[in-house]
Amino acid sequence: MKHTEAAPDSIKIGLISISDRASQGVYTDEGIPALKTWLEKAMLNPCTFSERLIADESHTITKNIIELVDQEACDLVLTTGGTGPSRRDVTPEATIAAGTREMPGFGEQMRQISLRFVPTAILSRQTAVLREIENHAALIINLPGQPKSIQETLEGLKDSEGKSIVPGIFAAVPYCIDLIGGPYIEVQESVVKAFRPKSAIKK
Ligand SMILES: Nc1ncnc2c1ncn2[C@@H]1O[C@H](COP(=O)(O)OP(=O)(O)OP(=O)(O)O)[C@@H](O)[C@H]1O
Ligand SMILES: Nc1nc2c(c(=O)[nH]1)N[C@H]1C(S)=C(S)[C@@H](COP(=O)(O)O)O[C@H]1N2
Image 1 (cartoon, rainbow, N blue to C red):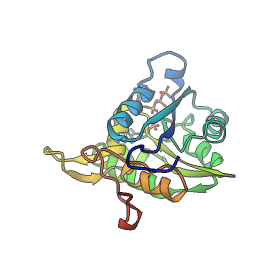
Image 2: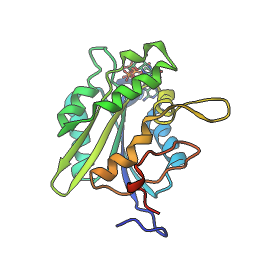
Image 3: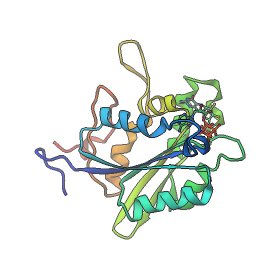
């Protein structure tokens, strides 16, 4: 469906929580709820979510990303967890295996943002990729596993009056999805301000 003022494009979003313990029921998964809560607050488009809670297994992560893009036609896939230096943290490599091209700027910006919250931000190896198949493409982004890091990285750092100090990575997502031929994403400006060149803004 093409964008019109009356009917914003609907967007399909895949959410993957990657945690050995949450997937085994040792603790309750907070990753998917935190992702959904933030997206429901930020997105003005109607969204359909496909959710997966899986262990830190490389093959399973790659397979789930590919299924969400190729079979469920997701435009955007967000993962949470498994980006650190522990032996079991394999999300970045599994994401790269599912991608056709890497988008390193997302990881770079996330580490910059996260350094404003935790000195251990540099321990996250998070990245992003495009997966481009015939007639469809998607953006896949890794977020760290700490549930609070989801809002921190997507929304960025704000002052006490809500003014942006460091923009969150979601600011660049709508234009990236435009460029890969996906739906026109509109976001709640008070949550995150999307950056698009003037020529790409639809009235
Ligand atoms: N899906 C989740 N739900 C709730 N809390 C989580 C989740 N993932 C991580 N956490 C919390 O964030 C901390 C750091 O996340 P990290 O991804 O490094 O976990 P981990 O030590 O690899 O363990 P696991 O994969 O079993 O969650 C965890 O120790 C846990 O307290
Ligand atoms: N915004 C933010 N980024 C963060 C964190 C956090 O709490 N907030 N935790 C850091 C820590 S302690 C680690 S080990 C790495 C990797 O986390 P992961 O293995 O849970 O993905 O993310 C880092 N990035």
